Length: 302
Image 1 (tube, rainbow, N blue to C red):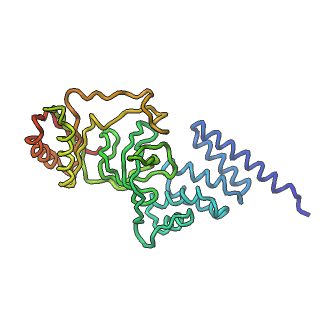
Image 2: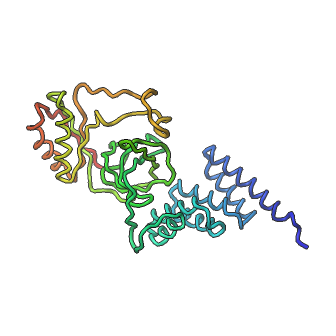
């Protein structure tokens, strides 16, 4: 007769190994955590949780094939695990495995369209946090599907990202931003999927009439848009906020660095080549109520 306690003792040992792995992961020791999760899988091969946790470690390390495999293993053992469906969809998207991604999204309850190539399933405008482990700049994007987004702002040059890059982002919200009256979740960027052809240029502009600067800047933005480029006044639009607000809900009274608007303004331009950016500025300056170009600098992708 089989020992009725065999299964429970096996699950108990696996659970202890899994919890030890979780603690090591929280302490920033992913390699050691991975070893504990793998031990849990050996102790109880029918349990989905450690397979999911291995997939999670590989996701944040960008090891997409291993993440895909282990999330598949988790779903074989627990088909109702929505989190594993999402992480499988993320890994499959990173690898361009669109058939697997479609199955994963449908299993997660998202009715993506049929097809054989990249998924065309617009999910609206959303903020995405670039380089979440370091500076954590947040830019607005158009979601192309559940985890791909097209950058619509001009990221700061040091971010390594550019206007119109397509990025892969996580599925869980990590903070919120307002778009009008609507609260939008912030998703952390996981990787660059498709680099754009745009370069970032920064012009130091001395405003002529500060009272009309907003209208002048709007004309430049519209002028750039008409030419399939982009222009932003970073002096007015870039806000530095504390980590608590960045990963939560920003509010006015906190330890944020104030922006000083006096003096020259840093105007960013996203253009395919330098002559396009310089031409844009040259065409705009005569209509900018006395504004003058002080400096111009290019920031090619490194």
